[in-house]
Image (tube, rainbow, N blue to C red; front, side):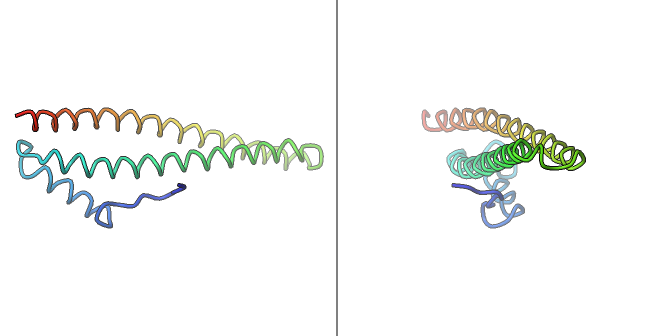
Length: 126
């Protein structure tokens, strides 16, 4: 599946934040960990899919610009080749930034999931 924009829980970013605040309650002692786990999985799946799709799109655009530059290198003037090369460098930079963001999101999601699952385990162990 290819998705470039997030779908927020309950329709908007504001409603999504209200839902997460509702689960945490007034103080952080009575958290509904099972509901939080369910919502966080939805959030994590959507966020990861969007980041993967954006990274894939940036990779495709970068490769397209590079092959366009190689294919028409001798047919265009120097200034057009320089512009294509600069465009390639910009797209390469964006691609690397998106891949770094994706790796950070995956690490943060794994850490958060392990913490939430630990609390759910403690809840059901009692």
